[in-house]
Length: 610
Image (cartoon, rainbow, N blue to C red; front, side, top):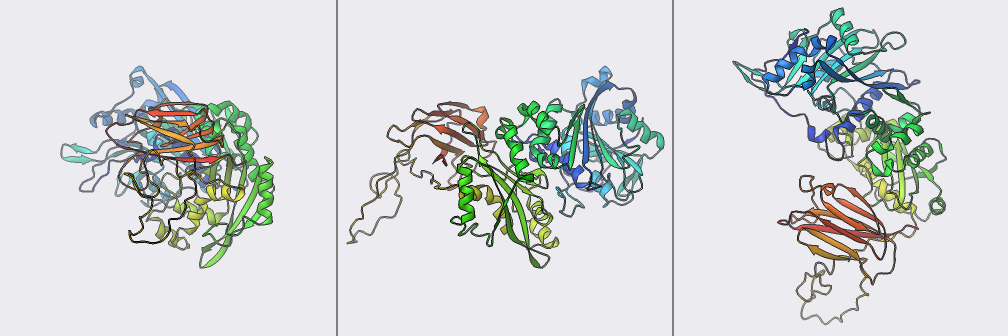
């Protein structure tokens, strides 16, 4: 039985936290972030830029047999820590998932240095040696592999570039606690012995060969001189082949379509030639409704961004964006093409200060009219990987895909991303990282890029209709002139004023009437409104006295409430409902909220862009 070490930490503080809430969310479950992290790491370790990175996901089931010596001691540790163990073990059965990459550097770095890439991966959570030029750099995404295992365990084997040396280790999350005179750590490691701040690995040939054969790690002989393999023992049941393929298509389609990435899942190979057929087969497993319901449209947009003609739009000033360009001939031509339902592609060129001078960077964007019965597609990709939370709050009726492949801009955005690499944020720790990478430590470019999903739509949509801001006037009994018992929308003039009262313009007719319910609300079309059809966005949160809404998934989850609607197409995203193609007979009712809390509900109405 190969030895595991559960170390004593002495007086060193511990943190029993896997950042689970960050990598296993309602909107992005670990089954999806697991795929994102695995492929991201492999792309960052790409060895030969002229060849694709290949990532293999394979599911296995077998008798314990040769696998027992590598996990047997760990069962005793988990029982000592009062943690569970799969019943299949006692039935002499084991399942596991392998993730292997090729044309990659492997897990390199000195085996004797705590701060090397190798030991950073296994020991230093929250630290990373990445310089920002890749797709990661926070040093915590690897926890998704531990979350994916029912016993929160991962084994790793690497064949390293350039010397083809081999090394292996394993890690399991336990529970820190007092055991006799020792206080034991949060993790145990598959290793021979402790060696100051690192471990002496099992390096005997029978161990390395036995690990590869037991868990069927193949491909590191012959043409593949380097790479990295992970073994996930007892993967959770919701990790499935179709889900892995779907997540790869949703989040890495540009890298697959441009030939940078091949993803093999069991017997299926996902590449530039097969992506459309496989996407059609697994579309039901794609999480995003806008992509899953029309995956061909999604791939067409990306293909156009990669290969189609682009109109260059220089952006001299990022604040405000596109100032004075709306009336330009180029923009008018693009607007006309969109009105004719043709896709349009633009290359935005704008300044970025780096390395002490201003350099011009660029990104590509493609827009097209979405189908009338579909939610608009809205995606930003940085170096082939999706940042799905960079999107417009009100996308209207235009699809949008943006690609950032220019290295300087991609590095800047990477340093501005959140820890799960889903959105562009402004964390305090980003400023010194930007400065160290040679950028000005401000977020002007980040804010510009994040605003583009809305600003591009506004720029290329003629006659944009402003949202109806008066829709809740009757509901809240708001008085226009300050009279009555309602709240005044403007200050009263002084009593002794002699100015004549100006005649107010006629009030807008709200599109919807609102009825409060004990645990929710009901909306119905206003019979006095005539400009149908319209689209409606309803945002909900419990009131907290602030002017802006503050919502948490712990307050409520819309997919767990009762939602009834008729004569409209409804999509749900977090705390927002979008009702499309509303008519004079539309109804929407949402119930199931906490009746002891005040619900703050806000509506935005807009007409079709055509």
